[in-house]
Length: 211
Image (tube, rainbow, N blue to C red; front, top):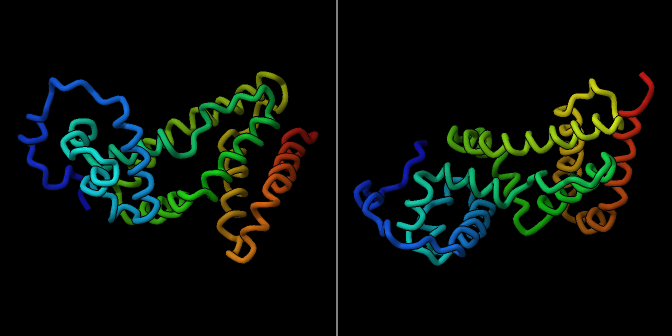
């Protein structure tokens, strides 16, 4: 399925109101609207028309900023989905705790279906896979930084794989959330901190064990 700026004519997009100052409140409204639409409907329902309507903006404003739906989805993920950029607690244990809490908050929150939609759509649509890859570049950089700082502080051996460590952490949280049946979901949320502490302790022991 091709990712285009829908049926909006090129001349209309290019001849928009170029002299009008950018509205600083527009992009946050668009990001919030776009993420909620994607969580509810996935790629098929993720249209410029829908986003413009929910955000309360004109379609031309969208076309001037994002030439394609893929470009919009990529930036929405960067701005509103999981990011480790702000995690810098001073030690690896607290960094991993903060990362787990962030993952739990996103996956169990009102927009938690974004993660499920992405898993489905990256298989179905090449353009979604490309958008997620562009978003993942930033996540990988910040994740590598967490592990690099831990190595520089001497907390873990220098040969630890940042990718393996992050896969273990994120995979465990995602599995916990997705595998818990609805009747047990409330209990899972109530015990989230206990799960996070146990997970971080287990991973940290493995990282610092002799040999």
